[in-house]
Length: 315
Image (cartoon, rainbow, N blue to C red; front, top):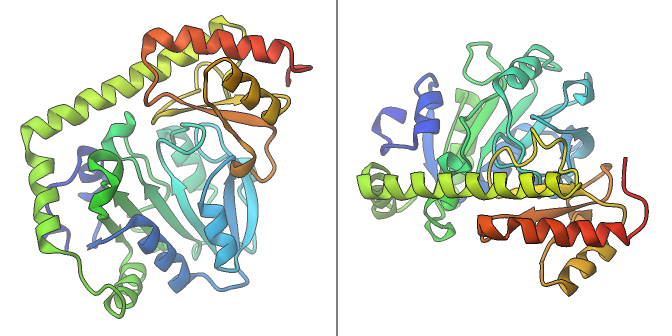
């Protein structure tokens, strides 16, 4: 139960303090898939962010129909399907991969107001935690409406993937069903690992490291977005909203493979966006985690040079 859980990150604590059920688990992808499996029928339709990442692959593996939904400061309400939707698997609320998008409080309120039906399950995927650099915002969770929901908070980005520990909270029915499934599989999570995470979260030195990392990622994101804008390259969706959180910046391009090869020839590695999208246009993912702010201008100018020779720019 929440009251006996180890101390958690500030973003999680603020939201979880108003929620009624919590349970520890190992591996956020495992618990997310169990939420979907126990609630969603094989014929269900599942909205999926575009661009987005592994959630859509998991949806297809579970036999769910994928309904592409655009994102900017969160999912676009006008794209939210109004009927025949049963699940909304793994919607990242901050540090969205590949765009760095983060759900704002205003967008969360709009999405809650346009909720398709009272039995739609939403699985909130907080994979990045506090290091994402923005507050955690949720859609229709723990508000007493009786809607099914789950929030999965992973510690992998904060302390490293080898910990393999996440925490889930949600409505009683969803969490109980996941708990039942878990008991006939892994069964339990090491108490030593749980205590280690608890100590790390309450250790002032470790908290200071997390704060320094959060500030560093924010500085690197803003340096690249500013450099791109100065070089005449428009980051997605705008210079104001681009790189809102996390460690990625998304840039629309006319031809992905040409840009990836051109950047590699200039000594820069970027990732083509084909694997991340259902319906959105061509783009590349630029990761800033290892990009010093002083090198952002060089990267932006290299991309501008490649784009200048790669055909018409996207509108």
